[in-house]
Image (cartoon, rainbow, N blue to C red):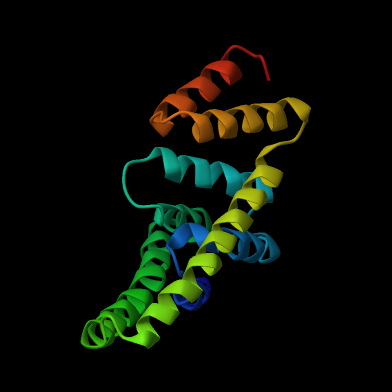
Length: 171
């Protein structure tokens, strides 16, 4: 039963992934916490682990599935997350290619930009709230955001910096 629930929940979510899997983080976190599958800090930890791993951002889904129902949960969760959106993308891309440059496709593209930016911003707020438990954590998050904004550093350097600060016990 839990596998069918995972398949259904991630299948529905996959159809809302305008701009990639990261835009789903607020809804994904709400879902897994409401279901009692994990706490908000556990979700933030799994998301961080998925981001540190090589590969697509959607890996967090497999980690959630693994946490809930082992290897079968990981596979079913990824199937639910990838199959519906892949089928939709295939058919929409064919439709889009036939109408490329039309007034309608230009309008849709302009309309999806602020939607995607808003969803990514909501994801960032959610993760910040789940990961930062004190003023030091918020300070580190602000410092990393400022560095990322002002410098063109590889994000792995920022992860290393945060790991060193945490490892040295400064947080």
